[in-house]
Length: 424
Image 1 (cartoon, rainbow, N blue to C red):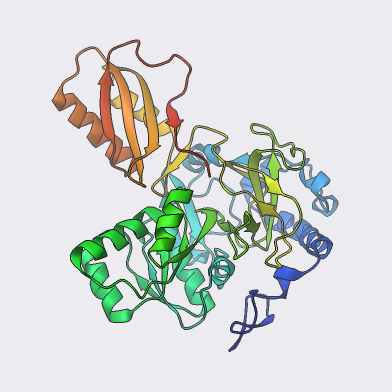
Image 2: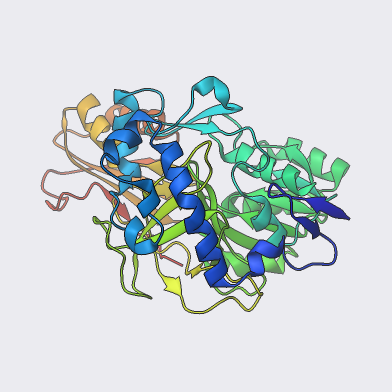
């Protein structure tokens, strides 16, 4: 079955191991093509007032190499909530009105994200293809469709590939079993945690989930122990790495050697807190420049750490490879697919002035993310603990335990989020 992708290139989905010819071109050819397009994207970005101010004095025609790109200022994702609040809805960084987009989302912060109207706006079809999804497959998509873009990212990507999508969202396993047994989906997209929950619940309830043979997971840690368990249940699961702003940034392939960076993106790895590229192979913060003229991002520092792998992937894809997620460059972290930020912990302190120092501890418990808010308090009570738990849930949209401790029990090191999960 031959199809055309957004670039107009023909591809044969059944015979090729690759989505299209872009994935296997010479690295120098890719680099030249990306940087030949970058000046036009910069001009488009500078039509937005935020970029016009940030890039004042820059001549787009001169930004045609990684060295030149590295001279531009970094835009930190951690700063977007304040920027969006100051100049709603997009902080002046989108060259278009809200009505020119297809869908409009919000993520915790809040950060407001528009969805462009062209096909596969989040660039996820390649990741699904690399994970073995093909046109005609039925996909159970369990990412949330409520306000945040996660569900629509994978929905749009699967449909761009020619798959039929069950818009299941997370939770409600009984209804999910009915859908699985009726439609017999071969594919799953969602967090790895929920995939395990779904498979465990099906086994316990005597329901048939055996049609699911492959998965593309994201939004939570996927440690080796959980990878092995999912594999033992007959599901071949691949990891993808992305954000609500950029869509799919990189994805795992059958080579299982790191993640291949997506096409139409320029990925840099910089020293945290700066815009300076690190030495090859060093761990640093991911900075991404996207070449979507409808929603360009110019050197967006997303706060995640990684390192580049040398050479090209044995799968034949020639783009840059990264090791995957290796921790956070700042204290913002992701729990069950949702970002939790220091600003949210600070808001808890404002709403409960009787508390002293606060520290949110994130761990893995039973192959799932779990968080506990530790708070110093002179007079702990069960009622106060319940009130704080409700505030934590309201601000982060996540359940978490609350541990009230005596004053002086938490370190005086300025750290309000402690991610104690093992990076993989």
